[in-house]
Image (cartoon, rainbow, N blue to C red; front, side):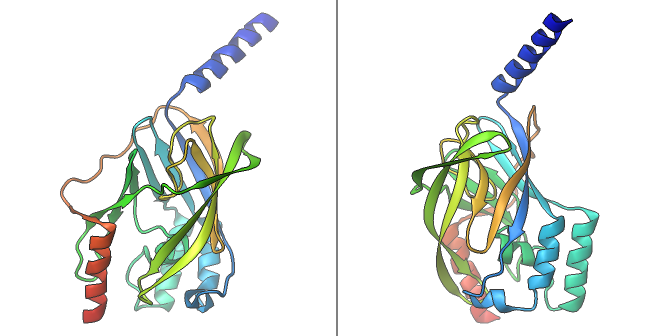
Length: 244
């Protein structure tokens, strides 16, 4: 009997090791921060409630990954309550975009990210092509996440605050594992020699809660929408805001 158990363990380990696709579930943690005006709004309570109930999913294969928010009943209730109290906010992606930097589903390829952007004002549904970050600085720090040894990497980046028409610069950190050697991660935080299991900045964190190495089916990226570069889309948005 012990021999059979040993053989079963070997088979399971070998299957997990050779599996080249899988799924990661991430939770999100919001940090209270007053360094930018948007963090001083009375919406902080709604955002914290949202973070408590929402998860994100990353599906990955050797050549492609797909990242999306996981809607559930509690998530819909928090958004519905927020929109009831703030009727001017029509978009269901407003809070995730402002606080989690999540504007829509992302298809991650080896050199670029392709993000679906839902219709905003007079800008129709579209795909925004974003370059993968390339100037990560890998450190000597390490920690374990879900049993995987992860290395820390830092990046100086910026984000454009669409409501304030201003760009903010921040440092972000990620923890990635070379045990799963694919350059994907939560949202558009990728481009490293291993899967990103944890992301940190001064506003929020993405943290992997579960990893399953298995066959996955990645949704097809829409091919009936216009594709813009990040700069092209920013120019469109600035034009919309000026005419608003």
